[in-house]
Every structure is written in structure tokens, then in C-alpha cells.
Image (tube, each protein chain N blue to C red):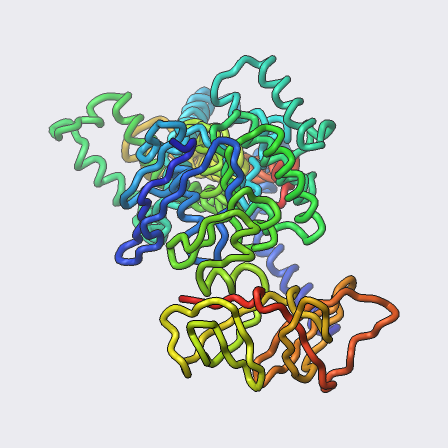
Length: 262
Length: 353
């Protein structure tokens, strides 16, 4: 028993070191821009760069739209599959997992080939069109996470009976989705949303090949030309992810009705 | 014309016919129970009335309006589910007012109706609570209030008491019946519990294999079952094999005892075997005035149930159950004792298929 405990602690410490050491190294390096002393010069340089603000802002806007589009597609789909097509669940799950096995480079080349200026839908011919394409690409990349989060949320509900109860009270599909299903899976949607946010902020391949001014390509550009700033950007990107994770925890804790045993 | 009219209703899932030519007429304000074992089609009938299942054929009319092809949200039918189905993100008051909000009723009207409903179910101070803060019985009361708040034309209750413990089940069924009487709302209640069905209903429909075997008042269903299934499903029933001596005069033999049924046994031949049935409460331990038929046997089992004692007596291989009141001065006989049972001939039912 005692030996087992010691091994558990050793394994835990090893895991912590494995994750923490590179981060501590990156953080420490990002603070060494000034010779001989620790300083925030690298951060100052990054934050005062107009291109940082522009790309970061662009990625935030794209992330918000991706979350909205993702939720609009995933919540009704997952709900309908649970309610009416439970036999199709494995198929839908497989489809939502495809973005994990198909590399983004394949997706983006497919987009460019299908939607170039000489195609039937020349989305790459305009800035707005390319933005829409990038948005759909991001939605695809986030699909596995968003679908799983929402589906897990729906699993805690007796979707069929709640739907029937609402129908017997005169509610139509829109009311059921907007007033009952969505509020009850909101935590799950938010979990998916924060993961989506983190994915969009750090995404490089789609944005770079579609030539959009996103945060991912900016990080690559800075990394190729500067020494300390990429480390500072990495720390900033990690912080954003952690803040997202923290927000998921907070939202879960402060949601009143989710304490309910359903 | 009846208020709720169900005509030649059929439902098939693939090749499986789960409801077969079901007909029922329900008057306004009537409380009807659909009683039967699992898989008999009672819930399917209810779900077709609610609109959650489409019909394979037949028609459902409410107050003269054909609702067979209407969507559930267009039928104005209230439904209470076994699993409560309260909306977990809404408070009790919001749950009760949900249907009215969907119907875009004025806020003041919703508020007063919610208060009225909470008063009706005896939970006036709990409007601000969430469903998870209520007990099972309270949740089911709220579900009832929610269904009634929209003033539905028909109330459907799908085994609403099954998930509750025994004591609450009894008290809540009395409350439901009281509320139903007070509001005069036409109600269909689905249950597999015969005690619930018999105690609450104006009429009971006993279902088996997708067919309504018998429809009648509880007294009639219990005392004059029309088929072997109804007799066996509703209440406890003792069955005895009897050999026909004379079909015309109704003379039969059970073991060594000859019994005169004083009625003709149509279709029975002398020497053939027929099935007789009798309820435990019509059998007495020992000889009793007015109960002239005597059966002799040995006590096989004794079950002490508190106010009553159920005994099983072996009469020529057939176990006959009987109930006696528990009187502290008279302990029951011991297992293995020879006993006499008395009954009246008129209480013997002749079972047909």
C-alpha cells in the first residue's frame, strides 16, 4: 500500500514536470529580453505592435462567429439525433470526428480547389467570401469538441420526455430548442465554446493558406524574425487557453439549476 | 356524441400490431383508467390521443373535432408523465406558467393562474424553487399543476404514481381524483396497478394484447369479469378445476365435493372440466351461515399482513387463498392443520376464455 502510494506520487511529479518544465522555460526565456535582468520588454514589444492588436482582434471576432455558427449547427443536430435518430448516433459521431483525422492542410486545399475564383462559388475571390470560408473551416475544426460537449450535456437530460411535455403545453420546435434544450445544455455549449475559442486563436494552417490576418500566422511571423517575442506570445496564448478553462469551471460552478439531479 | 371519441384505433410497428380496433367513448368530466400489463398497448393508446404517436388507422375526436392528424402542440391536451418531466432550468412557478407563456397570455394572468394552481396542489409557497429542490411527490404535483394551468380539454396521466413510494402514491392518487372532480376535467389514466385503477376511476378499460378486453365500472369489472384474463388480472383470484356432472342444473364436482352452481353451463358436456374462480374475500375459514358449500383441505401457507392475514389452503392439489381479519384473540391455525372452507355458490365464477 505504502509503496503504491510512493509510486503514485512519483508518477504525478513526473507528469507535472513534463508539463511544467517547458512552460517555465518559455516563461523564463520570455523575461530575458534585457541582458542580465528579468524584464517585460518582450511583452511590451508584442503588445505595442499594431499587427498584434489587429490579428488578435481579427481572431477574436472569428472565434465568436465560429462559436455561434458551431452552436447553431451542433445543438439542433445533436438534439435531433438523440430525439429521432438514435440509431444514426454512431454515424454522426464518426462524421464529427473526421476533422481530427483529416489534416487542416487537406481541408484548406479542398476549399481552395472548390471555391476558387473560377469555381461555381468563388468565395476566395473576395475578402468577405474568404472570411466565410475560414469561418466554416474553423467550425469544422471545432466540430469534434463542440459536438462531444453538447452531446454529453444532452445525455444528462431526458430529451424525449421533456420535448413531449413541452409539446403538450403547446410549444413548437423553436420554443423547445430555445427555451428548454439550449438553457439546459448551456454549460456544455460554453465548454465547447471555450475550446473553440482556444482552437481559433492558435490556428495557423487555414488562416495562413487563405491569407487572412489571424493571430496564428502572426505568431509564426514573429517566431521567424524575433528571439524573445515568440516566447512571450506563447505565454500569452497559453494564458488565453487557461483563462478559457477557468471560465468553464466558473460557469459550471455558478449555474444554479445544473445542480439538479435529472 | 361522447366528448372524447376513439374509433377503430389501430397501431402497428412494422408487422407488430400493438393496438387492435380500440374503441372508447368518454363523457365530459369522466375519469377513465386504461389498465393492463406491460406491453398491452395502453400507453400507445394514450400517446396516440396525445399526438406523440401517429395512428395506423382509426379516428380520435375531442368535442366533435377530429384531432387524429393534429400535432401534439395543437391539441390542447395536458399530460403528466411518470418521470415528472419538469423543466430543470425553470423554477416551479415558471414551469407551471410555461404553457401560458408559450400561448402568449398576459403576464398578470399568468401570475394569478400560477398562484391559483400552486394553491390547488397545496404548494403555495414553493414557486421560487427549482425542481431539484422538491421531493418526488411535490414534483409530480407541480407537473399536474403545469398540465392543468393551460386549461386543457383532456388530461392524460401516464403512470404518474409509479415512481413514488407506497404511502405518497396512495395520498397523491386521492389528491389527483379530488382535483379532477373539482375541475371536472375529462381524464385518461394509464396504470398497471389494479388498485389504483379501481379506486380512482369512473370506468376502467382492461387491456390485453392491444385489445380492450372489458370496459366497465370498477365494481362491475371486479365482480363480473367477462374473460379469464380480466378475472385474473384484476384482483387476486383462486381458480379451481371442476368436473361437470350435469350442465343443465350446473352440478359440478371439485375434488370430493359436489357443488350446485344453480345456473346452466352452456356448451359444457357431462364429464368435461371447467374452470371456476373465486375471490379470496368470499371464502371463509370454518363454517359460516349463508355459505353452504364446504371445501376441505390443509393449511399450506400463512402470510401475516398486519390488519389482515392471507392463508393458502390446499384443496385436492389446488391452492385457495383467503383473507381473514387479524383479531389478536384468535391466532391463525398452524401450517399443516386440516381446515374447512365455506363459500356461497353464487360467488363461484365460471371462467370462459
